[in-house]
Image (cartoon, one colour):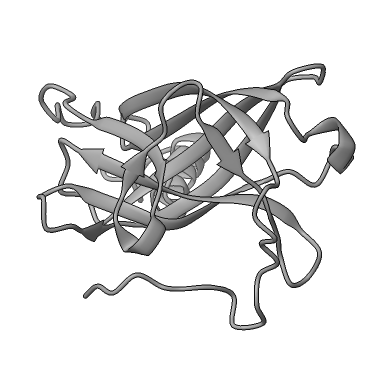
Length: 181
């Protein structure tokens, strides 16, 4: 019996299956993602005075900047090792003394190779606009920077003190870009 000789219900079923295949429905479950091997990703949060990465250590001050459009932020960078990926998804988890904890996605950022073999996300901005300035200055902030590449994830945690000691009002040129490829 061919599909042309089949009863109308069987022909309808064949047509239905063909339509499902044409629109991309697949009755077979997709294969699991390939095993990427062991995860060796490591991440550090730091700053780049004069384009030289310096990781933050607990107890250090994190300088806030007033951006030329009125946003308050800590200008920082991330250093990643154990990957060759051209980009990473970065997220801040932040708990400022006396404030509710919050999460701030930084997005998927391009990584650039450094002279030391590590990859860097430059101009990583931690925004601090939701809390009045008076409730930020001198407060301790527990910060965890998370980096994700595929199914691999790494975090780095540090406690810094938020300060505004430098009369740092960002210029209209939006700051300095570190040289790179």
